[in-house]
Length: 272
Image (cartoon, rainbow, N blue to C red; front, side):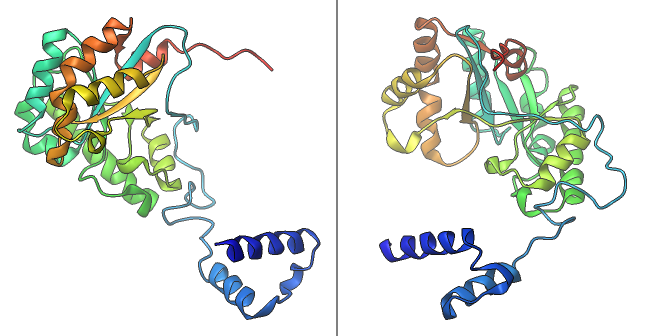
């Protein structure tokens, strides 16, 4: 490990001194490394990394895009979000719990699951918000902008058909933001929403109350909190502790809002 760090530091010094300019060779290892980098040069346009589609006019609406992890606010607000649903096992349980406490949430829906399980959410999302989470939860950061746009557009239409509301938020699977995702999101006039705190189910096996206390302690004003209503069985730790988490945050003076409501309450940072 130390030798590797030293080699990179020496290369950085030599690069600053101009000794690597013009393809100067620093031994077989450096030459091999340069070849590795050159062989994997990313294209200027096209592919998953690029956020442009060539030299023609970019069809991206207003041409602006924001990415949000959390919100700056002086109010004790938190946005609870659920990814990957809907699914018949857990989504009804989550909705029942949220109804019991009159708590809104934002559901980032997977298109093919919406198509298969529309009845689970139809008529039950009145206080909630929906977002786009791709068609089949594939890694969009590995696809080009046209493929990503088609995937998100298909999901968008399925959500509108199932719940009667057009999503305006996008959370890409795994939080991966390739340039192609940025381009497609701008083209669809989405706002990209990630998260600033997520459930840590693996740290609290069979301990829903302990997990709830951990999350309650970690929330700050403006937190966007990530949960899931579909997935492996260990995620049930968070869902079984959802009531305790809600009441614990309410006891701390927090109010639950949708992501869009949270964004509307953001305070502008002081200039300078």
